Image (tube, rainbow, N blue to C red; front, side):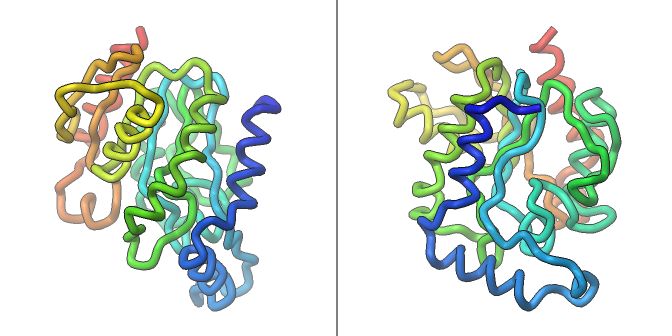
Length: 230
């Protein structure tokens, strides 16, 4: 159960109207729907993070999927069997961070232990491509969410956009990281704020279907994170 500080942050995320283009797109998708979900009520709003409020590991994704989290209201949830949600949750389950290996809907019983999942952008962007300005406007939400997660020691950036967004956040906080860490899969960087940043290819269908990111590669990242939490 999350504390009051995190609940306030999530209420602010859900009510955000800073990006008209993204807001319009999310609402359009929620009205038109996908045929398979035509009888469902779409979330259609910014999506807050999800997980253990006492987490020591934070995973940062890119943005909600149009018919995934934009439909269900929970990050990496509902994008279909074999989608990024199931791929990620299977890996978290194998590593002991999740109690079940799937993520289909908010009432599926999924619980994360010592892990929390957030995103660089909280609204589903057209073609999965937020603009630099939209990423910048959304950064305060990530900042506030991290501030409400007092035990985070490991940050796993799922993709380069999440990696760069976190580094930009540190810069705005006055944490100077020099030289700038390079993004690479399973490449870990010890940061001046005492946290460790680990790069990871994003578990998108494009990456998992082509073999750019495989289950053993995902396991490698989570093993590296786990070893630093022992």
